[in-house]
Length: 176
Ligand code: AMP
Image (cartoon, rainbow, N blue to C red; front, side, top):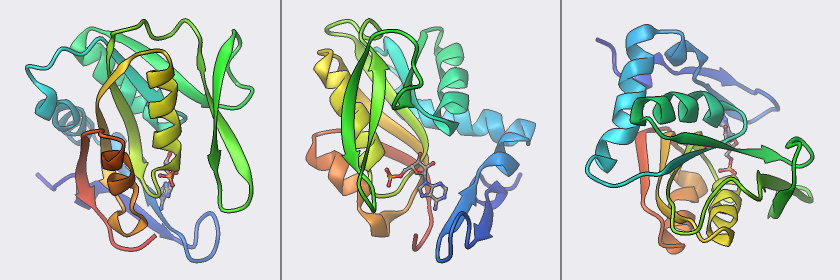
C-alpha cells in the first residue's frame, strides 16, 4: 500500500502564489488511507485516558469526528469567529495581516478532562496555539496534538512544544 504522504496531493500557488497547498482530500477518499490515517493519529496515545477530541475548523472536523468515534468519546469543534451558535469563549491569534479569533462553546470541556487536539496540518502553529489556550481556559488538559502534516520550516511544532504540548505528525513537507 502507498504511504500516507504519497496519497496527499500538492496544488502549487493555491490559494495564493507561493503557497504549496497540501490537499488531503485524495487521502480521505481512499478507504484504506483514511482508516490508516485515523489509526496512526491515535496510536501513540494508546493507554492514555482521553475524554474529548477537539477538532479545528474545517478539516480537523473530519479527522476529529472519525477519531472520537473510534475512541467512543465526545467531539468538540473549535470554529472561526461567529460560527458557533451558543455562548463561546474566544481567543485571538495573529494572521499575516491582522488578527482572527477561534471560538469554543463555554460548556464544551469540563475541568480536568483530558483532550486530544486534532487538525490536518500544522504550519506556524497559530491556530493550534489558540485552540490549546481555549482548552486550558476551561481547565482541560491537552494530552497531545495530532496532525497528518507538519511543515517544520514554519516552526509550529516548536511553538506548541514551548507550551509543553506533545505534538504528533504523520509526515513532513518542505517549505510553505
Ligand atoms: P497555522 O495556524 O499557520 O499552523 O496554519 C494551520 C491551518 O492552516 C490548518 O488548519 C491548515 O489546514 C491550514 N494550512 C496552512 N498552510 C497550509 C498548506 N500549505 N496546505 C494546506 N493547508 C494549510
